[in-house]
Amino acid sequence: QKEVEQNSGPLSVPEGAIASLNCTYSDRGSQSFFWYRQYSGKSPELIMSIYSNGDKEDGRFTAQLNKASQYVSLLIRDSQPSDSATYLCAFQGSGYALNFGKGTSLLVTP
Amino acid sequence: EAQVTQNPRYLITVTGKKLTVTCSQNMNHEYMSWYRQDPGLGLRQIYYSMNVEVTDKGDVPEGYKVSRKEKRNFPLILESPSPNQTSLYFCASSQHRGTEAFFGQGTRLTVV
Image 1 (cartoon, one colour):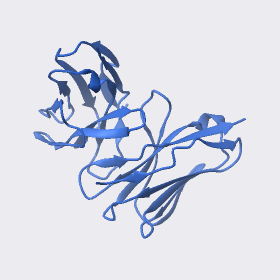
Image 2 (cartoon, each protein chain N blue to C red; image 1 turned 180 degrees about the horizontal axis):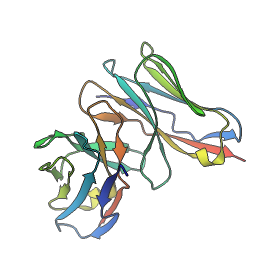
Image 3 (cartoon, rainbow over the protein chains, first blue to last red; image 1 turned 60 degrees about the horizontal axis):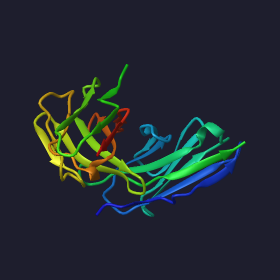
Image 4 (tube, one colour; image 1 turned 90 degrees about the horizontal axis):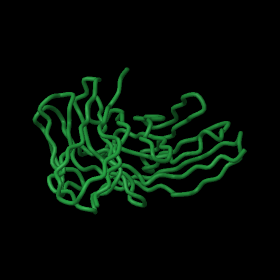
């Protein structure tokens, strides 16, 4: 069974701080990794994709991948109240399914 | 505008009454899938399709059917809905396996 582990939170950070979200996965054959943001009752929205070890930056977001440790993270710099949402980690394993974690709830307080 | 469109957005139905949730994408994506999302359980894949006429079961396929007769459409069929199928459903599409998935707006289904 392909598993994705995320801390459910809530993770609370003050406005302007860095939020750090973490995810571990079980399938060593995984090649593609994604972070989605989901507001309550809304559909998941793609934030970042990362395919190789190292860091990938896009605006205030940085994804970090370490395949040896089976670990992927998302850093959000200068966190804003509008970043308050649930963040879903997902990976494409050796099969056809995109496997999702249960998500980490992030709360950015003014 | 590139998008995945689901209909209806909200549906309340009775046990045993067949229903279809439609999904259409305008991005010429090969890969489409259906998920259900329940509190505490996260997103779980129901069925997926790698291309026209090619479908396969995901993690929770019981009680559902799908078809892929055209590349753009991937309807989800509940032949005899039961209350345990009350959930929030999402359709998603991606260009290929392993590429970014884009989600529809969701369908909130209640079976009474």
